[in-house]
Image (cartoon, rainbow, N blue to C red; front, side, top):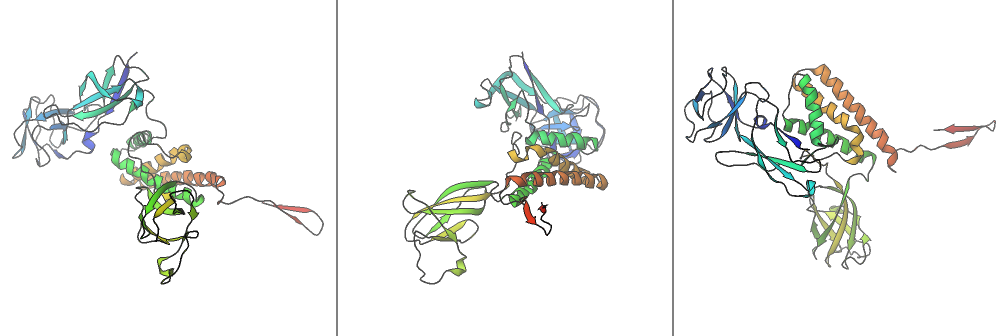
Length: 383
């Protein structure tokens, strides 16, 4: 059956760059640049922006760049006018790997799967003639001279990225910002998406105090001190304590550190706790070591990998993320009116999210029916 796998050509988005200081003819073995500080020996350089018809990738020679010129391995295929951008992308190849056991397996390099990057396209493509829809793929970049490589990409599957994933939302934003004559870098768009995720997450917590909770057990010694090390810890929701190895837990009440009296006596059946910093707590009584079982509010999750997905409760609101990203792109492009419109659209999505998630929470507004007799014995229903 075969599978065609595409890897995004985006090295120019994160690479240092300069510009050609002169027009370079076809067959040039040396190219002149305005600043050589970004370039290193044996690195790959990309001449021209990704997706442009005459963009090409060449390798630099083994000599350390100096002066105002870069010596190439081989010669240029096309003519390049002055002020053409030149990027220090380092890598000139993409290695395609596959797992025949899907994402549960281990990705290994495919025979003939090391492909030279095609900068005149937004993607470098590989046709796995022996591939199947049940296979999963990874890629990484490689420098063919020094053999330096990057880390592996996230898994690629025949079904592509899910509709709720970071990659899919980023793609939807880019499809629209391209029409707005503004193409944002992937990491910039990812930041916008995560900004909006933070807004959505905080609104959900305001509506439902039991939204986005984590749990952890933290040991404390005879000083009563314990340290919460969970990376997603934000604030305590519930605090239980055990002094008998977990045979029984009792609820611990919070007190401010300034409220404790000298020589105050505490009972293990009614313990108290206070904080001595953002994540350091102290239990009273503290003469016996034990374990605190915590339920805590979690920090807003950050979408990092392409396959990372929105929380399930936000799956129906992906458009608001795209609208927010498009609004920021329009602002950067100086189109404030369009930006305000897209930001308002994102706000509509946020308001829908709040109103639709509210009934799921016991702490949210509740609709009740009040039946009251009036003077003429009729019933008045108030909602």
